[in-house]
Image 1: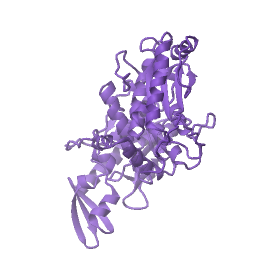
Image 2: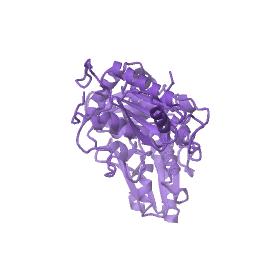
Image 3: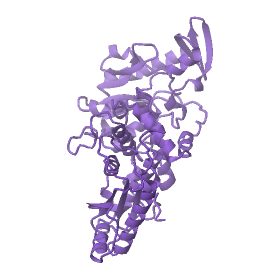
Length: 324
Length: 152
């Protein structure tokens, strides 16, 4: 597998270097190794030398499509490596007219799901030197020897319920599709919360949101947060105060989630980047679940030409408020 | 349970904010007034062009600044002055209502009603109903800004 992987990376690099030298693209967005072996960070490749740093491993969780709107200001033709969720994020940005399709080349990579370092640590029980992957198994190398772990046990939260591991839109596919087990029901946690009483739910969210630092990392990483000026920073009208206040935190999170109603692609980047582990996906998924129930099944980011459910209507729509 | 969820006092008078669409519900309120129908003074009416104009921030801000209940009233579906505003409003407010309930707000506290300009009696009746419901529920402390003065 390790050998296959190297070959795979070689093939990817070869194609990309041809395109980069041939002028099909001026810049390429990929990943490189971060400070630690378990980190892969974004890499902006302009020449052959920088291409040498490219990696494609099980830690390339960060969504590269989110960098495109800014990058398009400086570069004419941009190549970008996309996983399943990145490709749907691209569709999302396309729907908001944030990117120019004709100036972007999408290189598709089917994704096995990214690994969570914290969970690997928990499985190993001590410091990890390196890991090796074999099909559905991860071999964790510690100073006391090797340990085999089932891959599904150490997947990132955002990858565990992934419905579309393969890119839904691409110009060129750089990987081969693979068989993948059906993911578990993604709305279970939302349904659990729905069964609680109002006060229990409020207490739950109050506790979760009280940790919020309002760093807005969730917004920065999010492919549906594409407003030029966000409501949290708007001065006139000033929707939200700057002070730390439980009430303001509550409102920030409700409105952030609501702005994604019918637009959230369920990629889980918000929850992944949250430094205080607020379960933001539960809010997003609640909206996805309700909109599916009320206005028909819709999966954001699959088809850029399909209108999101909250931008349209039907005269005989149901409503969530009865006249009782 | 958190300290923000308190018991209500016996002489509790709720504050209810009603966002009424200019063309139907606000005119309905006018009709209730000119027809000398009574409705509780707890309801403070704010006029909006259309229920499709409603921003979720209006509702949350009201709760934050002391409202015990919020009502959005618009034209009956199909009767919108702007043809489709309330169709859009119905979708958005449905999703939003479920979201605030998911966050822990009691379902009675946020209501949406269709009231036409000829339904002065319905306007007065709905205002009475929501006031009674919220009186029974007690003051809202959820999402309330603790720096804000407490009226009750």
